[in-house]
Amino acid sequence: MANANPELLKWLNECLARGHSAENLSRSALASGWHADVVRVTVAEALGEQLVAERPGAPVSRSGNLPEPELDRSANYVDTPDRRVAVWSVMQHPRVVVFGNVLSEGECDELIALAQPKLARSLTVDNRTGGDEVNSARTSDGMFFNRGENPLCERIERRLAALVRWPYENGEGLQVLRYRHGAQYVPHHDYFDPAQPGTPRILARGGQRVGTIVMYLKAPEQGGATTFPDVGFEVAPVKGSAVFFSYARPHPDTRTLHGGAPVLAGEKYVATKWLREREFV
Image 1 (spheres, rainbow, N blue to C red):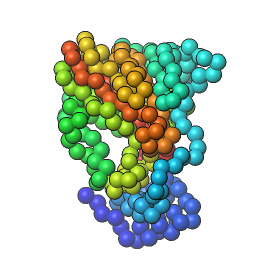
Image 2: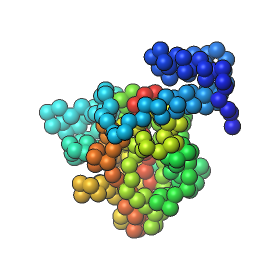
Image 3: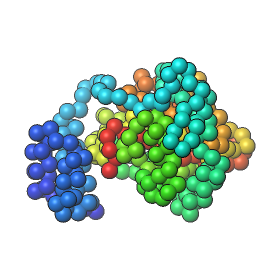
Image 4: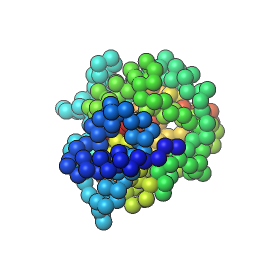
């Protein structure tokens, strides 16, 4: 594993103090010949020190916009550059929108086929270290694509960016998950807990998560709904549909606690897209 470079770290800290963005500094360092792994680790350390120093005593709202589909005048559909997406249901708080026809059946099947050879026991983010860990709360199998890894991923990701009006570059790569009989994901939040020591390292790659899109690639025969316990809302896993929700700050009062209910018959496949504040690197 690469280590932070003291010379690069000193330069980054000086530039960050003058108000330069981490994204621009990362690009400059790469253009100057620094190895990508060294840049990533050193930027994470520089931002980690800065974020720990500025960590608030209580959560505060972030400035700036959030991902948000165009739903003026109670729209029944949203046109993206390559697909008309149906609007099935809308909730204001938490901000939840259920969409139909986000993916075609063929796209669902192709994404599953591309993911299957790489599926392994799903990991969760360890907020104590900023790394990954196996967690008994999540009993699915999963894998990650890099953003734009293949033509199918790029087409879907650009469609999602247009759907919720959020930059393509601010999205993490798609994660595909398989839930077999009995598998579930207990209720959780998708944002990174600011109080955890590993969070600054995670935030260095693109800031907080601000939105989630869960797409259903294969529906089980029974069970497997996406649940929102704080508001008593469930989304059925209909193939080709998706649920989008956003969270203005990393705090439970966003009421975005959600989970994947146990699959009671058959199996479920989903693809998840997480949206960050800034460009995800």
